[in-house]
Image (cartoon, rainbow, N blue to C red; front, top):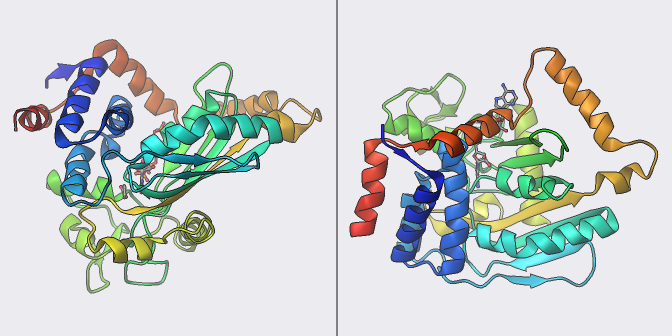
Length: 334
Ligand code: NDP
Ligand code: PYC
């Protein structure tokens, strides 16, 4: 398998995105997010997303030079209007405001409106942990998931990510879809000719299926039955309805297809643990006791595997398949 350095991969991806028509702001922000996914072994949101990003651009469903507008009235709620651009640049525009306000008030929220969204959320909460803050990020998607007990797509795969800062060690970060698996995972299995585990999806007739093609044309299932279904519904409410933006159903109706990236909103919360603890205890020391107890049972912490892969990628380079490299080259030569 060809091996490429993180810097070289980033350079190529940015050139591909610039050539496709994104301005420098978006090409750079998109490059950071997809290359971070590839570097950390999060392949379902790595460079495989480039085709979808460019398809969405060519279909006129994303603004390639949108200038995110930050509205900061000094309150706990920072608003960023993405103006129909992809979300990473909008998030980056609002991040300094969010972090500053969380440090000042203890708790702050960033509302992203009108963004086109395909990306993983862990880079966002990790950006907050790097500043000593805890973070929670969530967004709807488009209807591809049946509610528990239902048979037809209604909810999105609605990701949720949480991050807790750690002075010595990688941050505690989890990030996952509220469906059993991300849709990108099912698409990768389809491409690899693999079947799905039981319990991931229903076909178009509402019957259980292990065929990725039938799953993509049917309904995915929430994780943890009614529990995942309820968390996913909460995300629709908080990061869709409450922020005056689209639910997954509205996003699908507006877009009319699941082959392009959907346009909707996102909600990011930032917390200052010291402000919440208010001197009663050291929240970071208490957290370390909890993490040590988890590790003491032989379990691992979320985020650890991703950071291990990151360290290896940065030291040894990133392995890509011949097809993946050829795909990038073809886009550069096209
Ligand atoms: P996974 O089911 O693979 O879960 C990943 C998370 O669980 C990671 O934080 C991972 O940590 C942690 N984890 C996995 N195994 C263990 C373990 N044994 N012990 C402790 N922690 C563990 O994720 P999904 O496939 O559901 O989601 C993948 C990505 O898709 C996410 O980044 C999500 O944001 C993105 N997504 C984006 C959407 C969008 O609309 N923008 C929609 C849906 C998903 P580690 O990384 O260390 O392995
Ligand atoms: O992998 O489920 C997914 C997904 C949907 C939108 C972006 N990623």
